[in-house]
Amino acid sequence: MICIPITANNMENALQDMTEASKVADVIELRLDYIQNPNLELLLKNRTKPIIATNRPVREGGKYTGSEEERISLLKQAIQMQVEYVDIEHDSVQYIKKFLSSPVNNKTKCIVSYHDFHNTPDTLTGIYQKLSQCKTDIIKIVTYANDITDNFKIYRLLQTFKTPIISFCMGDYGIISRILYKKFGSFLTFASLGKGKESAPGQINIHELLDVYQLRKQDSNTAIYGLIGNPVSHSISPAIHNTLFQAMNFHSVYIPFRVNNISAFMKEFKGIGIKGCSITIPYKESVIKYVDEIDPLAKKIGAVNTIVNQNGRLVGYNTDCAAAIKTLKNMFPVSSEDNHLKDKNIALLGAGGVARSIAFGLKEVGAKVTIINRNYLRAQSLAQDVGCAAEDLSRFQTDDMKWDILINATPVGMHPSVNETPINKNSLQAKVHVFDTIYNPLETKLLQDAKARGCKVANGLPMFLYQAAAQFSLWTGKIPPYELLEKIAYKKLFGGVTEVTHNKY
View (cartoon, rainbow, N blue to C red):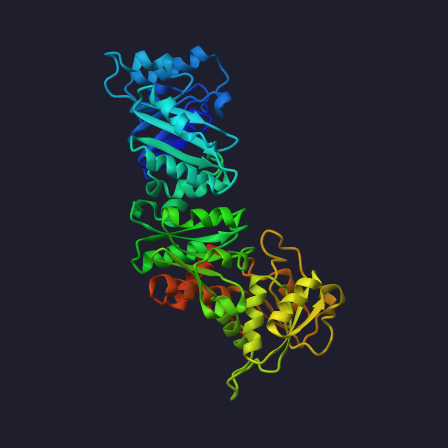
């Protein structure tokens, strides 16, 4: 079930929000501690969905500041009015336990809650066993995730005990436990009615849960795919792949995995049945040691951006390389030559996973590549692997007339740092083609500067879409139409577009 909390601070707004929430929620939580002078009778009279009555004190992350006696009294009043659920803290349940079992109550179910707003302890089993002694209807254990692996502690708890449990992690790192609540086995999940109406950190907007992550269609058999990286919040990959799964009738979901420690995360990878992943900054190289097999191209490049779980064996691929070369070829007019990039002098900024993929691809088609990086030793190392030149960023002169193409394969200029650029505007020459692998924003400061200097430019969206299509094909065996990918991307980036056109170079 999906529960939407009502966090309005007055009766008028609370009633309005209840009406809106009733259109999409299975259950509504009345956060009585948020509402000033709540009229419980009026609130319950206007309900059209089951209600959880909650009156959370400040010590448990709520807003109620009155006396404990008055707080509990309001919950008892809700029970008298036969509210469907009442949520009570584990250290206060004794105050309403007798009231719940009295002849007055023949409907209300009790949720006994435990919250940890700082971390996710290793003692979840002990906490559950302690709460189960309360002889309540539903146990609720909510903790704070400081790392994505904290979600797997919750998963193991839910898999161990099959009685009704509400359990998930708060915070940005806990988002996956909210999205995958059915897969994890939680009795319900919480979603906010809109921005600013959250009752806890990490709560997701109901429309995002329903539209992007297709929560209504998920079940225990839903195949899980995702994006491994840090950061991941800027990525439009969830919108791309989830829309494709829906449009092409795959019972799958794609979610962001914000990973701090790749080693710790990969140990849990197979445990929850993840079928495949995209890999982004900064793990395209380091993830290689955690796959069971690597595709020859990815092995040659030394960077993986796609993982496929083939019956328990993790296989690594690289779809960045072909996508980048296709994008770069489109920058030049079609000629009788098969290879438009042969003998082009290319300055490649960066020495990470994306740069590796592009460098090997360019070398393969006969381009003359120079790796440019702030860390010259990293530039030299990659150049040695590829068999090309290297140069220190501090000594690099982009106004050198030998350059045909400048490629930014670093994250400099990516959202939210949109005012940053890897090179000085004044050193750009009009004859240079500039390709920025970043797609969010579509026009980085580097590209703005390049256009102002008369350069022909290309953003990273075509490369992103080409590589995403190849990933989808590796996971499903189906090739998605590029036009659909582009339409999804523009809708996500701009909130809709009347006419979608391909990048023209």
